[in-house]
Image (tube, rainbow over all chains, first blue to last red; front, side, top):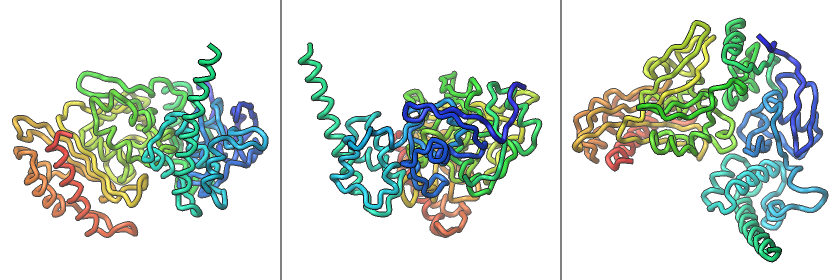
Length: 175
Length: 283
């Protein structure tokens, strides 16, 4: 038998393109690793048992609840958090749409919604309203009533499609 | 971090994983963790060791074999939901996958994990009982196959031995008609009642059928009285209405904060009717 069960182990996780290595307890969640070891506190913890969706991050590009994943399970995998969406003070298109559509009030759930929506738009840049509703149904927001969040994702999708077109035109110009 | 302390190991082979399970009676398998992690967080489960299957080879395939589709235990709900092979050969799985929690759960939770967990409100246990699936188990002593009728023996209880691992499930692709119905308070919630129905149909007569109910009852259960009524009948609205009455009369639902026994009894009747109407339409 090559490996022995360990109560503490060294994990190495790529978060937002940077590698974080730390010895952790086996019972430590990925959410706690992100906040306490990587010191990336944009990811919020609400219920800590998989109901609220606040802690949603992308693991290997798929949306996942970081409270329902052990740090040990994420060893060697790629994680993206809300901090990956932008550098510095500039908001990206999705974040800007959330602000313009009033897609948040207290903001506690927002990182989870942003990462869930990021995964949706990466997989399907032109989602229907039903696709968006299905996607956000996995997150709880107690402030907005969801309509403004759905509107924000619709706006981001519409603008993203426009961006792609612009990009295509630019490539056309170069050729 | 709310779980009690445990040890963790991620073996690279099935033999190694079985060794860990065999050497510690309180060791548990970790697959996607989407059911286990909440249990750990609430300290309803306190295993000594978690044996993570993510690096065990051979558990990730969806394969077309003679009369069945064989699904590896580590295949995610999402992979089942998006599989073209599943949609073509065993479409009831595609229908049911959309009811499993939310996309963020479906990307991590696994087919084998949910099946072995044997949650009475689980979509896979309900569907696998209806279609008559075969579970492929591996223990230290060798492989064995268990039919769904003998696998789900109670709430959160299967006939697996503690030191066995569910490696694949073979889902028969031989049924002509399939239907899956679920009633939940809101999308992604645990269902109040689930009904799965399959049938073989020749010359507008049902020649064989299996119907199961989940969530409304203590453990996933076949509705044998409904099956008996269906066999030999025409798949039509009249049969659907009679089946609904038989289901309402024969099912013994649970009562809890989410719904009374009488409410669930009527819900099961309604879902059975819808399921048989879908069988009629060849869904």
